[in-house]
Image (tube, rainbow, N blue to C red; front, top):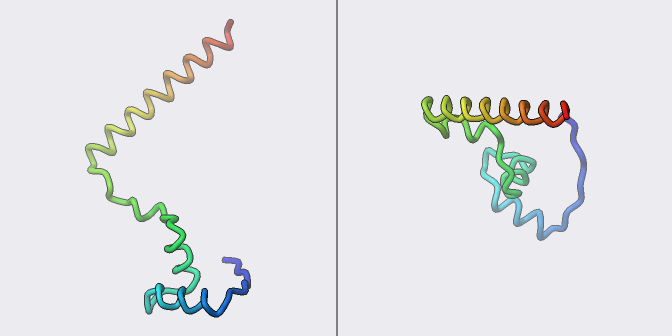
Length: 75
């Protein structure tokens, strides 16, 4: 992964150091504090049945949109 060097104030450094976990890098702390979540954090959020139902609904919706699109193009 590429890295960048940044400059922060002494105050910002102290705050970041206080908020990061002991086993966490400064980069990880910044990402965590930004509120951005990793996709992997959602793993297991849906039951197997819910995931299956959601997948079916998505496929049906996409099929309906495709059909409507082709219908519009045929005019």
